[in-house]
Each structure stands twice: as structure tokens, then as C-alpha cells.
Image (cartoon, rainbow, N blue to C red; front, side, top):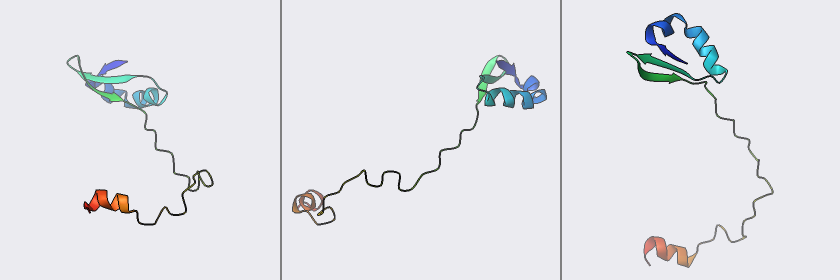
Length: 75
């Protein structure tokens, strides 16, 4: 739905409801689209430990590595 600014002011509650229901709502001025109303979707909360037991690291993961040091420090 495309609606002009002055109409949108009068029908804002209905337009917000339409956008929340997935409908496309575009507000225009002088027949030029300006903004699109979209529903806010908050990011999902992170769940700690989601991959616990699924990732395996080598025992020497935290040990220094001469090859990597040479790349970073040009030794």
C-alpha cells in the first residue's frame, strides 16, 4: 500500500498494524516514495553453551607456534 504523508498521519495506528502483519506500507510525498514501514524483529538472544561438546580443539591450541610468530612478527 502506498499512502501520502497527510493520510498516513491520520491512519498511523492502522498502518503500523498492517506493517506488523507483513503488509508493505510505503509513505510518499508528492507521489515520491519516502519511507517504508516495517515490523521490528528483535535479534534472538544468544544462548550460552549452544555448541558445547561439538567443537574440538587441539591440546596445543594455546601454545606458541613458531610458524605463526614468523608470519606476524617477521622473524
